[in-house]
Image (cartoon, rainbow, N blue to C red; front, side):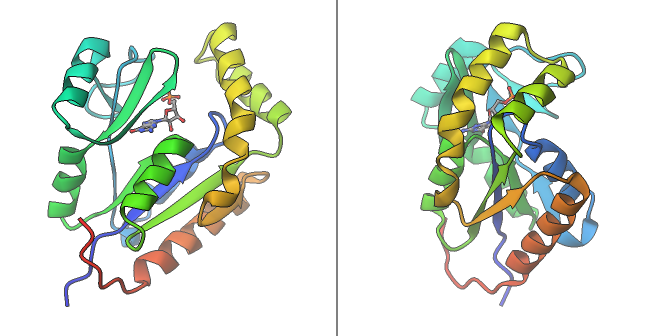
Length: 198
Ligand code: 5GP
């Protein structure tokens, strides 16, 4: 029987290191992963490319796509900042036989897991502490002080959702976290899934 493509969801508070882990996994060819490019209503940051990092839609177009029922899940992650997974994006990657990896917020992550209980693994990346998270966001210099404060404030509620995930990876030491992530994803991909969840 042909292997059923899997969904690998990485969720975490902003600054926990999930994007670094996802990028690391994408380089491991044997995992046969492809990144689900999300839609976002925000402006691109310096160096971000439309159709590579996100589909940058702007708010009016994002709302049109909500009305058209084009999303598998979407969230207003921060005020006036919408993010979502397009159905067409996942279908495109599945048709290529890829396992799809997601870098999405905790609510979206849990929603995908509930839609695909068998073929999806939900992984929560836990930063060492909220303090450390704040330091990392400041060092990253991609957000204004106000936006950093907003992300840090949200982090505590996001941390509280960790027990609802299938697996928690503690990101105290990045090299250890990378190895752990590789093993978890490899094991899940090898697992036989018979269901035809669509
Ligand atoms: P950023 O603005 O830093 O790129 O992303 C902000 C947050 O939105 C991150 O937690 C990111 O994982 C989340 N996010 C990105 N894409 C999606 C998506 O498609 N759906 C949901 N629910 N969250 C997303």
